[in-house]
Length: 188
Image (cartoon, rainbow, N blue to C red):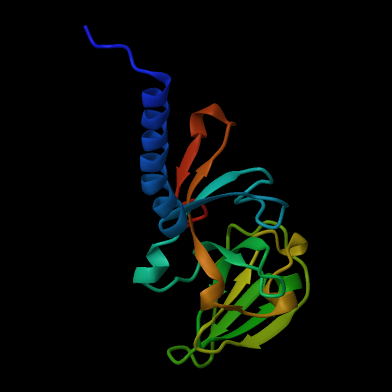
């Protein structure tokens, strides 16, 4: 039979457990994954207000963001706020948006006359037209709900250092048969 622990021994055991948990959890939270709750309707129908997201923070340390990635980033005009949008334009490209026609044309070295994006996931069109030439460290982002999204059409490009990570998991309570989506927002 084990001897009964004193209150002092129990306290130090609890302190060791909490310290070990923090040593394991905090680096994962700071460097690998983060959680966010979608606030607003700028990404409807892909994401609904209140969806819970887990983002992957490490992928962009090892590789470059890709067109159509759904990303969380610090809002360029107030870096204390986080936004979620879809990457439309990549560094060095020229982006030409005709919002009322739901046309996004990308001009790059490979396509000097441009090519149009196929965006079947966009259900609500509208907003303002925009044309922007991206620098080597800039991305053009847009919400999937074009008529209800504040995005690069309004406030310009997002610099690479403001990208926090890409959406890895979506967790939701309803519908019950679809509680977790891996890489939500991928339509390829």
